[in-house]
Length: 248
Image 1 (tube, rainbow, N blue to C red):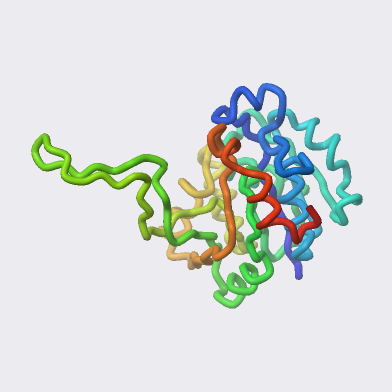
Image 2 (cartoon, rainbow, N blue to C red):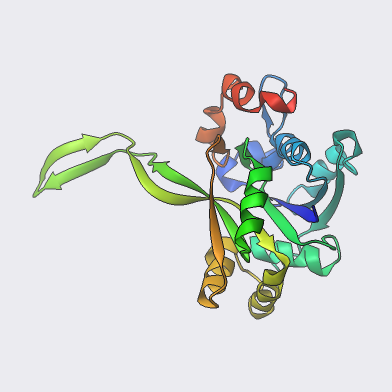
């Protein structure tokens, strides 16, 4: 399986401040063993035999490199591509890693956000992606719980209030698979604008060019540890129940 993983872990994590004054956002400790969030990502990739991993780093990059080193103690081969200041954005980080040879000899690249905690079945996801012959496959969740209540109003009178309703809509988890045939379009975008985003810019460009973009629905647990509230809401039991198969 000629696949590489690109893990986005370079952001400052301003929504996790003040924790990120002390930690890289993907290195915040979670679970009863207080292991870094990013370690769960690495172990999930290794569990699914995705062993060649490139960390796309930036803010507090040395913290990640010092902890994971070459990846051998996790059964992986890890290298690092530090985001250039002039090429901000997730797509720019990926193009930089490809351009500097940190990601090479691949058919597909699994793009994984380092602040997403999940037990996503990566093996099945790749199988679906390859059978569809898509340029890219997005990992979606069919349903989203709003973090706030929604009121229905007639005139100035509230007629109903639903606290944190769940809507049956297809929301992106941020994770995706990109086939090698889509990389020229990504590089072309990057040459036009140094600050491009995979979801905001790259995927719409593929669709505009009539490239096939497939959907893979995550049926498993996924959790965005992107804010202080979400971090505080991530209990040890939640981690152990959903990620215990990784050895914790």
